[in-house]
Image: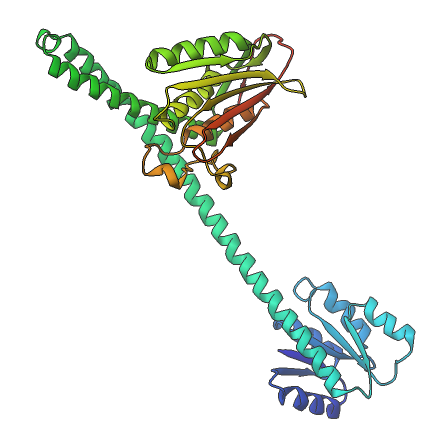
Length: 379
């Protein structure tokens, strides 16, 4: 709707008919005071304001309209038959007007301006509605996100208890003479134990995510020998996967400040992924080097299926799985997200270099720090 403000009825009638004949909805006010009352009650796409009016003139009305938060962005076109000098035109713009026309005006020019400003108003309204909708969607997702994290935390803790009990019963069964002397039963129990290990790892990942989201994951920062960290991790993974070869390239004698258990968790995740996503390869490389900016870079290289370049930025996102491989390989896409958070809490960097069908290099870089007294912090 357009508001026309003029103290002369003949001007109001003629301009109103002209705009209504061009399919605009129009409201009128015969004084500045009446106009102010109307703009506080209604929203107008445009205000056409006469300058010379008794009592409150157009400039004063424009200043007051521009001072209201509700009408701050309402466009104002000044119309004047008397105040046509440059100083009045300048004052019109200074008081909040976006255009200044002098009478007699060209109806076609006025119509073009009205259409333009009306269109801009409609676009601004659409943008505002989109922003409000988006804001509501974001808030709704944050509600859902909080509920999901709460559910993950509760479910993970609840699953730990029966899992521990099942593990205990399996260990008891393994000790029974009838089981120890029967290869078929032993095979069944071994397979069950393997599946329980997978379930345990899944629950541990869920618990880690819950701790990360709630800021309760604790880090015990101590001096760590990089060489010792790599040696221990490679030894552990070799015992888990005796059919694979793990070769270390490069020697890192540096000592950093970090949480050894958490950093080993990152390495183990990289290594098990390298095995998982390279089913036709038995070799995994562990690379270590000092970067040009004096950081330690540790990487795990496989010779597997690789990752498309357009997926590199998303691979560390929570619950993200590459579509091309999701139907072949099990997992919920939590491991790399947890690794990312652990590395970030060590002030480190992470990344991946990969080509489809040519393997991948997952790496992280840690800054060299002076190892002071043992420290513990919560994140």
